[in-house]
Length: 333
Image (cartoon, rainbow, N blue to C red):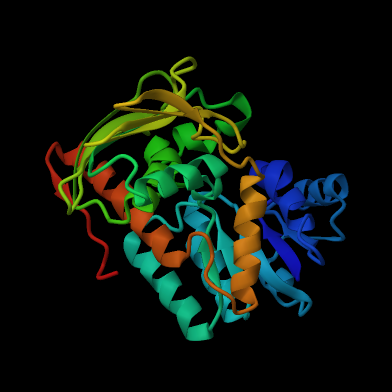
Protein backbone atom coordinates (compact mmCIF):
# COMPACT_ATOMS: atom_id res chain seq x y z
CA UNK A 1 0.00 0.00 0.00
CA UNK A 2 1.11 3.53 -0.75
CA UNK A 3 0.66 6.16 1.94
CA UNK A 4 0.13 9.89 2.05
CA UNK A 5 1.23 11.89 5.08
CA UNK A 6 -1.18 14.63 6.07
CA UNK A 7 1.15 16.78 8.12
CA UNK A 8 4.93 17.25 7.92
CA UNK A 9 5.22 16.47 11.62
CA UNK A 10 7.90 15.44 14.06
CA UNK A 11 6.15 12.17 14.90
CA UNK A 12 5.94 11.35 11.19
CA UNK A 13 9.65 11.89 10.64
CA UNK A 14 10.86 10.35 13.90
CA UNK A 15 8.58 7.32 14.05
CA UNK A 16 5.93 6.75 11.40
CA UNK A 17 7.84 6.97 8.13
CA UNK A 18 10.25 4.27 9.26
CA UNK A 19 7.42 2.14 10.63
CA UNK A 20 5.48 2.38 7.36
CA UNK A 21 8.52 1.47 5.29
CA UNK A 22 9.24 -1.48 7.56
CA UNK A 23 6.00 -3.08 6.37
CA UNK A 24 6.60 -5.25 3.31
CA UNK A 25 5.52 -3.47 0.14
CA UNK A 26 4.51 -0.21 1.85
CA UNK A 27 5.86 3.16 0.74
CA UNK A 28 5.34 6.82 1.56
CA UNK A 29 4.38 8.60 -1.66
CA UNK A 30 3.40 12.12 -0.62
CA UNK A 31 3.31 14.63 2.21
CA UNK A 32 0.98 17.56 2.84
CA UNK A 33 2.14 20.77 4.54
CA UNK A 34 0.55 24.20 4.81
CA UNK A 35 3.95 25.60 3.79
CA UNK A 36 5.24 24.69 0.33
CA UNK A 37 8.82 25.34 1.41
CA UNK A 38 8.54 23.23 4.56
CA UNK A 39 6.77 20.47 2.66
CA UNK A 40 9.45 20.30 -0.04
CA UNK A 41 12.21 20.28 2.56
CA UNK A 42 10.45 17.53 4.54
CA UNK A 43 9.96 15.45 1.39
CA UNK A 44 13.59 15.83 0.36
CA UNK A 45 14.90 15.05 3.84
CA UNK A 46 12.77 11.92 4.12
CA UNK A 47 12.97 10.65 0.55
CA UNK A 48 9.29 11.25 -0.26
CA UNK A 49 8.51 11.73 -3.99
CA UNK A 50 5.74 14.34 -3.77
CA UNK A 51 4.87 17.33 -1.58
CA UNK A 52 1.52 19.14 -1.59
CA UNK A 53 -0.09 22.14 0.04
CA UNK A 54 -3.57 21.17 -1.19
CA UNK A 55 -5.24 18.20 0.51
CA UNK A 56 -7.58 17.47 -2.39
CA UNK A 57 -4.61 17.18 -4.74
CA UNK A 58 -2.95 14.63 -2.50
CA UNK A 59 -6.18 12.67 -2.06
CA UNK A 60 -6.79 12.69 -5.81
CA UNK A 61 -3.76 10.50 -6.43
CA UNK A 62 -5.25 7.05 -7.09
CA UNK A 63 -2.15 5.14 -6.01
CA UNK A 64 -2.48 6.38 -2.42
CA UNK A 65 -4.55 3.90 -0.43
CA UNK A 66 -4.19 5.28 3.09
CA UNK A 67 -3.32 8.51 4.85
CA UNK A 68 -1.68 9.16 8.19
CA UNK A 69 -2.95 12.39 9.79
CA UNK A 70 -0.64 14.16 12.23
CA UNK A 71 -1.54 17.82 11.85
CA UNK A 72 -2.60 20.02 14.75
CA UNK A 73 -5.68 18.69 16.50
CA UNK A 74 -8.27 21.11 15.13
CA UNK A 75 -7.58 19.92 11.56
CA UNK A 76 -8.07 16.18 12.12
CA UNK A 77 -11.84 16.17 11.62
CA UNK A 78 -12.03 17.94 8.27
CA UNK A 79 -8.97 16.17 6.88
CA UNK A 80 -10.21 12.71 7.87
CA UNK A 81 -13.67 13.39 6.45
CA UNK A 82 -12.10 14.48 3.14
CA UNK A 83 -9.98 11.31 3.10
CA UNK A 84 -13.02 9.09 3.66
CA UNK A 85 -14.87 10.90 0.86
CA UNK A 86 -11.88 10.17 -1.39
CA UNK A 87 -11.94 6.47 -0.50
CA UNK A 88 -8.77 6.42 1.63
CA UNK A 89 -8.19 4.43 4.80
CA UNK A 90 -7.20 6.67 7.72
CA UNK A 91 -4.77 6.34 10.62
CA UNK A 92 -5.22 9.48 12.71
CA UNK A 93 -3.28 10.91 15.61
CA UNK A 94 -5.06 11.53 18.86
CA UNK A 95 -7.26 13.21 19.76
CA UNK A 96 -9.41 12.37 16.76
CA UNK A 97 -11.18 15.73 16.97
CA UNK A 98 -11.97 18.57 19.33
CA UNK A 99 -15.45 17.22 20.12
CA UNK A 100 -16.95 13.79 20.63
CA UNK A 101 -19.72 14.69 18.18
CA UNK A 102 -17.14 15.21 15.43
CA UNK A 103 -15.38 11.97 16.35
CA UNK A 104 -18.72 10.16 15.98
CA UNK A 105 -19.17 11.66 12.51
CA UNK A 106 -15.73 10.36 11.57
CA UNK A 107 -16.56 6.87 12.81
CA UNK A 108 -19.81 6.77 10.85
CA UNK A 109 -18.24 8.19 7.69
CA UNK A 110 -15.62 5.42 7.71
CA UNK A 111 -18.28 2.77 8.33
CA UNK A 112 -20.48 4.05 5.51
CA UNK A 113 -17.55 4.04 3.11
CA UNK A 114 -16.31 0.62 4.21
CA UNK A 115 -12.91 2.02 5.14
CA UNK A 116 -10.51 1.27 7.99
CA UNK A 117 -10.29 4.05 10.57
CA UNK A 118 -7.80 3.88 13.41
CA UNK A 119 -6.48 6.09 16.19
CA UNK A 120 -2.71 6.03 16.67
CA UNK A 121 -2.82 5.05 20.35
CA UNK A 122 0.67 3.62 20.48
CA UNK A 123 0.80 2.64 24.16
CA UNK A 124 -1.57 -0.32 23.75
CA UNK A 125 0.88 -1.59 21.11
CA UNK A 126 3.85 -1.66 23.48
CA UNK A 127 5.18 -4.99 24.71
CA UNK A 128 5.02 -3.76 28.29
CA UNK A 129 1.33 -2.94 28.08
CA UNK A 130 0.49 -6.14 26.24
CA UNK A 131 2.16 -8.02 29.09
CA UNK A 132 0.31 -6.02 31.75
CA UNK A 133 -3.01 -6.65 30.05
CA UNK A 134 -2.31 -10.39 29.87
CA UNK A 135 -1.44 -10.55 33.57
CA UNK A 136 -4.71 -8.83 34.47
CA UNK A 137 -6.72 -11.06 32.12
CA UNK A 138 -5.12 -14.20 33.56
CA UNK A 139 -6.19 -13.17 37.06
CA UNK A 140 -2.63 -13.01 38.38
CA UNK A 141 -3.51 -9.95 40.46
CA UNK A 142 -6.90 -11.26 41.58
CA UNK A 143 -9.84 -8.90 41.51
CA UNK A 144 -8.62 -5.46 40.46
CA UNK A 145 -9.22 -2.76 43.04
CA UNK A 146 -7.42 0.28 41.72
CA UNK A 147 -5.05 1.65 39.11
CA UNK A 148 -2.70 4.62 39.17
CA UNK A 149 -1.31 6.21 36.00
CA UNK A 150 1.53 8.68 36.38
CA UNK A 151 2.42 10.40 33.14
CA UNK A 152 3.96 13.68 34.29
CA UNK A 153 6.95 14.50 32.09
CA UNK A 154 8.95 17.45 30.79
CA UNK A 155 7.65 18.29 27.32
CA UNK A 156 10.69 18.47 25.00
CA UNK A 157 11.51 21.93 23.66
CA UNK A 158 10.90 20.97 20.02
CA UNK A 159 7.37 19.74 20.83
CA UNK A 160 6.16 22.83 22.67
CA UNK A 161 4.82 25.52 20.35
CA UNK A 162 1.05 25.18 19.90
CA UNK A 163 0.78 22.50 22.59
CA UNK A 164 1.44 25.05 25.33
CA UNK A 165 -0.25 28.20 24.04
CA UNK A 166 -2.96 27.50 21.46
CA UNK A 167 -6.31 26.30 22.79
CA UNK A 168 -7.95 26.66 19.37
CA UNK A 169 -5.49 24.14 17.92
CA UNK A 170 -6.25 21.69 20.71
CA UNK A 171 -3.30 22.56 22.92
CA UNK A 172 -2.93 21.57 26.56
CA UNK A 173 -1.85 18.44 28.39
CA UNK A 174 -5.36 16.93 28.51
CA UNK A 175 -5.64 16.70 24.72
CA UNK A 176 -2.03 15.63 24.40
CA UNK A 177 -1.55 13.04 27.17
CA UNK A 178 -4.79 12.37 29.06
CA UNK A 179 -6.30 10.85 25.90
CA UNK A 180 -3.42 8.34 25.79
CA UNK A 181 -3.90 7.41 29.42
CA UNK A 182 -7.65 7.03 28.95
CA UNK A 183 -7.05 4.58 26.12
CA UNK A 184 -4.47 2.69 28.16
CA UNK A 185 -6.82 2.30 31.13
CA UNK A 186 -9.63 1.10 28.84
CA UNK A 187 -7.22 -1.34 27.18
CA UNK A 188 -6.15 -2.87 30.48
CA UNK A 189 -9.47 -2.99 32.29
CA UNK A 190 -11.81 -3.70 29.39
CA UNK A 191 -14.35 -1.12 30.53
CA UNK A 192 -15.05 2.56 30.07
CA UNK A 193 -14.65 5.22 32.77
CA UNK A 194 -18.05 6.31 34.02
CA UNK A 195 -17.43 9.45 36.08
CA UNK A 196 -14.40 11.73 36.53
CA UNK A 197 -13.35 14.40 39.01
CA UNK A 198 -10.41 16.60 37.97
CA UNK A 199 -8.29 19.62 38.75
CA UNK A 200 -6.04 21.34 36.17
CA UNK A 201 -3.49 24.14 36.47
CA UNK A 202 -0.78 25.94 34.57
CA UNK A 203 2.44 25.18 36.46
CA UNK A 204 5.06 26.92 34.36
CA UNK A 205 4.59 26.21 30.64
CA UNK A 206 0.93 26.64 29.78
CA UNK A 207 -0.08 30.01 28.36
CA UNK A 208 -3.86 30.02 28.17
CA UNK A 209 -3.96 26.20 28.37
CA UNK A 210 -3.45 23.74 31.23
CA UNK A 211 -0.07 22.04 31.50
CA UNK A 212 -0.87 19.77 34.48
CA UNK A 213 -3.96 17.81 35.48
CA UNK A 214 -4.90 15.24 38.10
CA UNK A 215 -8.12 13.25 38.01
CA UNK A 216 -9.91 10.32 39.61
CA UNK A 217 -12.11 8.07 37.49
CA UNK A 218 -14.82 5.69 38.64
CA UNK A 219 -15.26 2.56 36.53
CA UNK A 220 -18.57 0.68 36.18
CA UNK A 221 -17.06 -2.25 38.09
CA UNK A 222 -16.15 0.01 41.00
CA UNK A 223 -12.41 0.06 40.24
CA UNK A 224 -10.91 3.45 41.09
CA UNK A 225 -8.37 5.05 38.75
CA UNK A 226 -6.06 7.94 39.57
CA UNK A 227 -4.36 9.75 36.68
CA UNK A 228 -1.72 12.48 36.59
CA UNK A 229 -0.49 14.17 33.41
CA UNK A 230 1.90 17.11 33.10
CA UNK A 231 4.30 18.91 30.76
CA UNK A 232 6.39 20.33 33.61
CA UNK A 233 7.87 17.42 35.62
CA UNK A 234 11.43 16.64 34.45
CA UNK A 235 12.23 13.98 37.07
CA UNK A 236 8.90 12.37 38.00
CA UNK A 237 9.17 9.43 35.64
CA UNK A 238 6.13 7.73 34.15
CA UNK A 239 4.36 4.47 34.69
CA UNK A 240 1.32 2.58 35.81
CA UNK A 241 0.36 0.65 38.93
CA UNK A 242 -2.37 -1.98 39.13
CA UNK A 243 -3.48 -3.23 42.54
CA UNK A 244 -5.61 -6.32 43.10
CA UNK A 245 -6.68 -8.67 45.86
CA UNK A 246 -3.88 -11.15 45.06
CA UNK A 247 -1.04 -8.86 44.02
CA UNK A 248 0.21 -5.49 42.83
CA UNK A 249 1.98 -4.60 39.60
CA UNK A 250 4.41 -1.70 39.24
CA UNK A 251 5.48 -0.65 35.73
CA UNK A 252 7.94 2.23 35.40
CA UNK A 253 9.11 4.02 32.28
CA UNK A 254 6.46 2.38 30.11
CA UNK A 255 4.37 5.43 29.11
CA UNK A 256 6.63 6.17 26.17
CA UNK A 257 7.11 5.80 22.45
CA UNK A 258 10.13 3.58 23.03
CA UNK A 259 10.06 -0.13 24.03
CA UNK A 260 11.52 0.58 27.45
CA UNK A 261 10.67 0.28 31.12
CA UNK A 262 10.47 -2.33 33.85
CA UNK A 263 7.56 -4.32 35.28
CA UNK A 264 7.61 -5.85 38.76
CA UNK A 265 4.89 -7.81 40.51
CA UNK A 266 4.49 -8.28 44.24
CA UNK A 267 2.31 -10.97 45.79
CA UNK A 268 2.42 -13.37 48.75
CA UNK A 269 5.54 -15.02 47.33
CA UNK A 270 7.54 -11.77 47.11
CA UNK A 271 8.58 -9.41 44.33
CA UNK A 272 9.74 -10.46 40.88
CA UNK A 273 10.70 -8.55 37.75
CA UNK A 274 8.82 -9.65 34.65
CA UNK A 275 10.19 -10.02 31.14
CA UNK A 276 8.23 -8.92 28.09
CA UNK A 277 8.68 -8.64 24.35
CA UNK A 278 10.26 -5.37 23.21
CA UNK A 279 9.29 -4.27 19.72
CA UNK A 280 8.65 -1.07 17.78
CA UNK A 281 5.27 0.15 19.00
CA UNK A 282 4.35 1.95 15.78
CA UNK A 283 5.33 -0.99 13.62
CA UNK A 284 3.09 -3.22 15.74
CA UNK A 285 0.17 -0.85 15.25
CA UNK A 286 0.75 -0.59 11.52
CA UNK A 287 0.77 -4.38 11.14
CA UNK A 288 -2.67 -4.52 12.77
CA UNK A 289 -3.88 -1.65 10.57
CA UNK A 290 -2.65 -3.36 7.41
CA UNK A 291 -4.27 -6.65 8.40
CA UNK A 292 -7.55 -4.81 8.91
CA UNK A 293 -7.25 -3.23 5.45
CA UNK A 294 -6.75 -6.74 4.07
CA UNK A 295 -9.95 -7.83 5.81
CA UNK A 296 -8.37 -9.63 8.75
CA UNK A 297 -9.25 -8.37 12.22
CA UNK A 298 -9.33 -4.80 13.44
CA UNK A 299 -6.77 -2.06 14.08
CA UNK A 300 -5.02 -1.99 17.43
CA UNK A 301 -7.19 1.02 18.33
CA UNK A 302 -10.11 1.72 16.01
CA UNK A 303 -12.18 4.86 15.60
CA UNK A 304 -14.48 3.97 18.48
CA UNK A 305 -11.46 3.55 20.75
CA UNK A 306 -10.33 7.00 19.67
CA UNK A 307 -13.78 8.42 20.31
CA UNK A 308 -13.91 6.96 23.80
CA UNK A 309 -10.48 8.21 24.83
CA UNK A 310 -11.52 11.66 23.61
CA UNK A 311 -14.76 11.44 25.59
CA UNK A 312 -12.82 10.74 28.79
CA UNK A 313 -10.44 13.62 28.12
CA UNK A 314 -13.34 15.98 27.42
CA UNK A 315 -14.97 14.95 30.69
CA UNK A 316 -11.69 15.58 32.55
CA UNK A 317 -11.44 19.04 30.99
CA UNK A 318 -15.04 19.84 31.84
CA UNK A 319 -14.69 18.63 35.41
CA UNK A 320 -11.57 20.72 35.93
CA UNK A 321 -13.32 23.78 34.50
CA UNK A 322 -16.59 23.36 36.40
CA UNK A 323 -15.16 22.03 39.66
CA UNK A 324 -17.50 19.05 39.94
CA UNK A 325 -17.86 15.39 39.07
CA UNK A 326 -18.76 14.80 35.40
CA UNK A 327 -20.24 11.73 33.73
CA UNK A 328 -18.41 10.67 30.56
CA UNK A 329 -20.60 11.01 27.45
CA UNK A 330 -19.77 8.41 24.80
CA UNK A 331 -22.63 9.48 22.49
CA UNK A 332 -24.13 6.00 22.55
CA UNK A 333 -20.95 4.12 21.57
